[in-house]
Image (cartoon, rainbow over the protein chains, first blue to last red):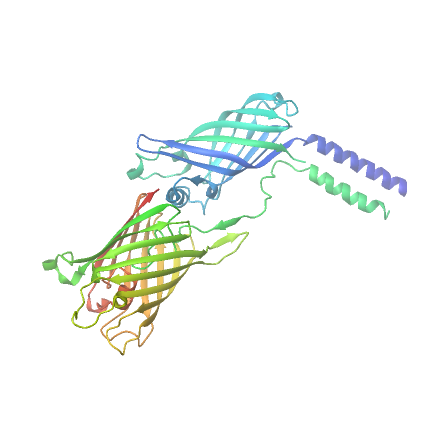
Length: 187
Length: 286
């Protein structure tokens, strides 16, 4: 009896170790930064979100983002209110998400300090509209922390964000999104 | 076996922990989700809403109430005459506001202090309503009606204290209750009370993201006002254009300050004595 249970235990231990080494490298942060920028000759508008949740796996290159729309901070309180009320309808569409892949994950050595670049592709969902996006990410490994930076442009009209004719000279359809996140290994 | 069972459970737990996939973005602790934009601006129609202007922002306000629409074409439906107020609200903090204004109604200067001490929220902290305290002081600078008698400066003063309680019921519908005390240092006759209690009810319903319908009624508790006075009722629209909020409405009240529209309103909707009015609000940042 004792022998059998020891055997079962040993097998389970092996499975656990195998599983842990397999999905081993999950890197995560809850304080990533995303900012967006809209430029028109009349007005520049920017907002920043410092509470971005994101994670990637160094094993298979899967990467995810989850962004609470309400956490975007504007310089002007009224702009922030209008952003949430009129454009993003953030009580209805609370989050924006991205789920994709770091194509060259094999090139990124999370245990070796250095700077690596890779294509990142995946699905971006804003206001329940999902579109494919692709950009180049820069991954900087330093002391076990992986910093990722990326930027890309999107059209707000693609994501069901309606800009009234009266403010079209102030709000661009072309929005620049910049990402900056420090991932730490999940223990 | 008894010794092994705990070990077994421990192993099972650790293996589950390691076995987690990348969907670890979902788990997190709930956050406090404060309700915003209960009203489009810091007035329902005549009276204040629970909205405050943000820190270091100045909300410049111009308010007009015209004459009776029943004046017909001869008075261009009331547009020949107007009571107006020019003033503004300033944010000392996001929750503490001060404001001043001047109205041509009895040449009244007014000032107020407004403090939001409770914010409606869901999530980690559940607060069903937002609550605001506001105290106004008004000074009428109208020439004394009887200059020959002894007139005290204090007779020019009146005060209004309000507790504003509001709840954003749904994304579109907000309701506000405003228990109000008006104190007049000087009253029309000795039989009239100096303190007048009333309760305001404000409702707003969104039609689109940028346009709302608003209604406001101030009910003065019985046996306080002279018989020629009546309660104020106002119905209108808020139109938000990004930089401005335009409030366009019909009301029976003439005075654009609390003591005036709550306790001095004479015109009755039932007599067709309705005025067109508007408030224009423009926010400046400092």
